[in-house]
Image 1 (cartoon, rainbow, N blue to C red):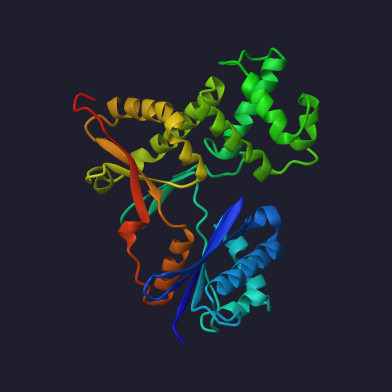
Image 2: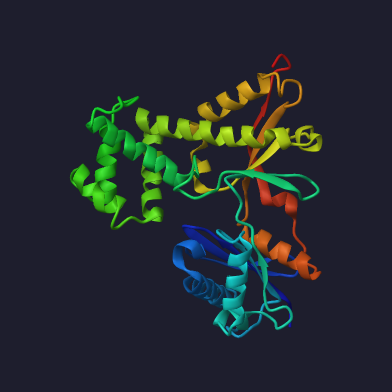
Length: 334
């Protein structure tokens, strides 16, 4: 029987499973809800992954009992060793998911919950900044953008902070999205009925407003661009020369739907990095950068790393997995 490899991209909002043949052909892709065990619990996490795997098998035309060679799990919230151990124990204790893979190995977990930004060197060493969750950071993400816009409306109502632009459009969009008629109606969404993924979903409405020309919507995305660039600045001192001197300059892989709104983020992002490049610390060293978008789910990376971990042959065209969508070279005078 031909070998089938599996990979999981487990996010705090959405998740994805991909099944591949040994020659790298994608047999099926399926999507599902959050598999962050800190948010949904270990049991729910495992059940959701199993459901997605079974659905992918059906879409690939495989027998539901067909075992996978491996299932590489790239999970949000999976970096802590104790959490990994608990998850593996649950999978190995007779859950349906354990029957989805061959007995040796049953499962290869790729615990790769990255911070908001991670600088990865060619030798695999890395340094990160952010990624502590919406309570402690995640600046520049969809929840952060949504919260900034909503807070601006509240502060304007209270005359606490003057808004940088008129709040009418954002307030109207907020009332429609959350289905409320006033600010008091927002309180359940902020407390008793708070759902991070739903709150973050308001970002899509803000992106539509930015595209339509609303100044406040454009402003919050510009602020997101600034804070995301500050994350780049935070890890830049650790960058080794090979990362800075290639044809692409510093290659920055941009993951997440928020990057679909690059145009309104661009002014803030480029402004911060222009200042960094002209600073005494980086002048003559930081020559430029390129932003790349993934053409495949990171579930593909989970499968690839899993295959490497057990010495299995999985052929992938890595150059086709990312595409440059913005490139910038600093002036020699900077």
